[in-house]
Length: 105
Image (tube, rainbow, N blue to C red; front, side):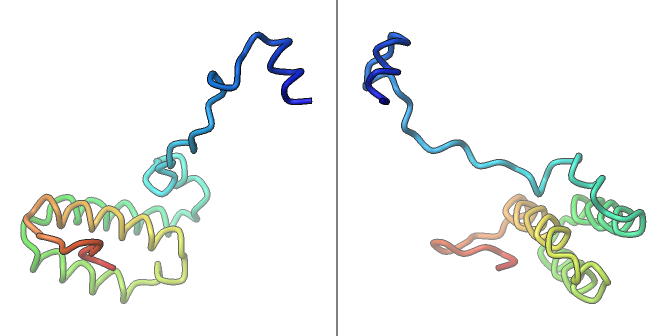
C-alpha cells in the first residue's frame, strides 16, 4: 500500500524523510506559562530573572537552594524549566562540564 501511495504521489523511497523530528523546547516556551497558576507564573518569572542576572557559580548555587526550598518543587514542569535555564546560565558563566554532566543534574 505504501509503495502504491509513493507511486501515485510521485515520490520514491529515497525521497521519503525517515529522520526523527527535531526536539522541541517545550519547557522554555513562554506559551507554556499559561498552564500555570498565577502564583507559579510569578515564581517562575522571578527565578528566571534572577538566574539570568547571576554572574558566578556561587550565585547560581544560592539560587538553586532557594528554588529547591520553594513551592515550585511540587510542579515537575516548572522545576525542569528552571533547571534548563540554570544549566544554560552555568555554561555561560564558566562551568566546565565533564562528558554528559550538567551543572544541575
